[in-house]
Image (tube, rainbow, N blue to C red; front, side, top):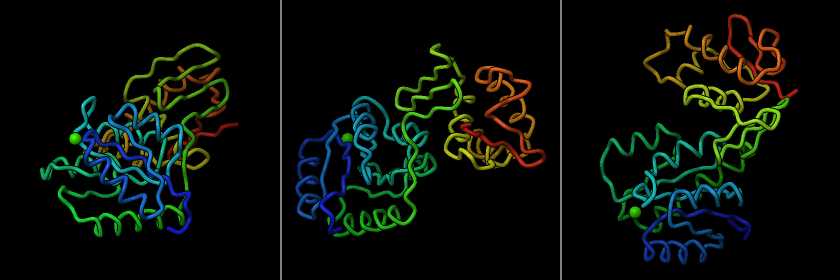
Length: 231
Ligand code: CA
């Protein structure tokens, strides 16, 4: 952590905790961008592209688990959850939603710093981020706003269609298998429901492709899965 350029977005509504964490992190040479609620936090992450996010689960405007869920549709930034909740279910749902790690308050500063170092190291070795705005063909996907435009017209996607598209975009250029799509979009209990993917992929093509019968971006990889090509 020698580079003074490490940035962390800290999403926490309690001013005292925020101030304490800011001083602690700054004394380690880390730049801290503070946010007092979930919406502001998502906006800061989209604008600043930080190296890591520290996130409190109990926020005034939205549940921290939903912050994780929204963030994971367009970013792979490491997320360390800081929460007073000792509830196992909360930890599990935050991790399932894509958080990387979890600390229960009160925690010691040395432990927090050790966890942060682990995630920053991992990040520099596997640096991979999706831009918050993704374009393909005539389609623009604005992840922070959850807005999809096609040729300047807003397109309405159902939550399932939106998730499906997010997984394809996160893996743009790569094949995504049927079971990977089922697991990420519908959850681990639906692995045998391969026809769901076919039906919903058809809906996506109807809404996003100029010629849904001959797609130019959302390709079928016979017997394997699907692949999104920017083109
Ligand atoms: Ca709180």
